[in-house]
View (cartoon, rainbow, N blue to C red):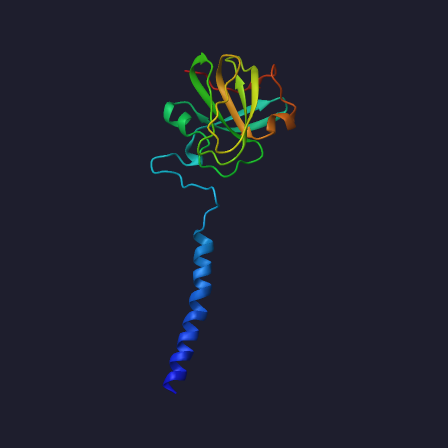
Length: 167
């Protein structure tokens, strides 16, 4: 009887422990490429926001207007809402290059002059370190989900409205 009871208890423990372990692993397993946001980095909702327009489309843009925010950008994000992006605001009219290190989602980037004119658009693959540089000087860059500008018919020469003043 003792052996039977120990065996029954052991089977019960295994029957309970295995499903609990599976649930715990499933709950804590991160996507293969996901990286936790490092301590000190801003959470996505902590960036200031701006409502921009590109033609008839309204964009909800997080704004990165200082060195730390521009450095983080959309790193560690795993998704964007359909018309959500990030606007980079620079202190000088220059060629500002971008790369995709620690950026987990593919993006499109529009480089923009101070008057809101889109000068260049480029497509960027996730987690790459090659440079994406515009051919023209600009004060802003707007990152959106890959293909967003093409799907909306936004091309160089068009204007983005609602841009905050560059410092």
